[in-house]
Amino acid sequence: MSAGGHAGRDHAKLSASGAHRWLVCTPSAALEAQFPDTGSAAAAEGTLAHEIAEIKARCKCFKRGEAGYMTKAAANKKLSKLASEELHTEEMETCADEYAEEIYLQYLGFSEKPYVYFETRLDLTSYVPEGFGTADAILIGGGKLVICDFKYGKGVPVSPDHNPQLMLYALGALDKYGLIFPIEKVVLAIHQPRLQTGLATWETTPEELLAFGEYVKGRAALAIDGAGDYVPGSEQCRFCRARQVCRARADHNIQLAFEGVAGMLPPIISAQEAGEYISRGEDVAKWLADLKDWALGACLRGEEVPGYKAVEGRGSREWTDQAAAFKALQ
Image 1 (cartoon, rainbow, N blue to C red):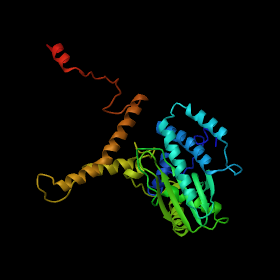
Image 2 (tube, one colour):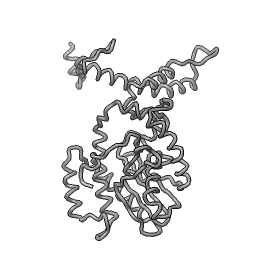
Image 3 (tube, rainbow, N blue to C red):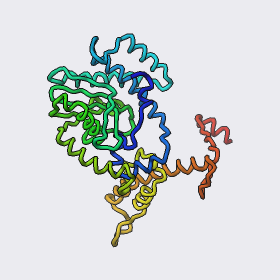
């Protein structure tokens, strides 16, 4: 895939990457569709890292004459072009090398030479209306299917254990290759080099995946119509585009913040209660921060938010030499 191919991907309304959200909070997909996907610096950085990682993994796994083989000259030309990008860093190169090595180790772990597919578009419409997704790497052969996902982010650790995105990719791969390759074992793997060493894996079976697929069908039918109940929570709200102004999330956090404990209690809270309040307050703090960001944006757009206005920030001055500070004050 040429540079920019990752960035140019289409996105399904019920995306596999957002399945952790719309499977739990089914109306969220229709709600966040009202808000533009503005992207972020982190997303652009991740796209560039994926481009580099894909090229290096191809060079590691494919030999001359094999489909997907890339000559060293072609690979170096593409890598050189990507290295000129503004967001490029040496850390990206290191992480991409580690990813390529992990993919190759999976390759070597097959009982027979596996077929390897990079950046493969998978049809998910058997389970999700209009659904599709792109798997970073698929290895298949000897009764085993491996789905690998490269995650460059360093903010949130992601586990492959019952990961809905990878489970959907695995279902798509079973639909695509199942008639050609008999599959008995499925391995879901995530490489997140900036947060963990090596490849995190979780093993499952086609039977468990198909049972999951039946569950997905019912939830996706609700989600595509914007039906079902809102179920706010830290995991499903974290990257939702509607999170700043979602009423269900607001009501949920107001309840978390102000709901007390019934009954006669001593005037001083216990350590256990303090821990519970801190835990409950974590998402409240995130919600308030999101709400303030939205209010600032509204003010900058000329909208009126009662009690708030956008003003130019004033930088603070700090003394770096204490002796000079005392002398100036005298």
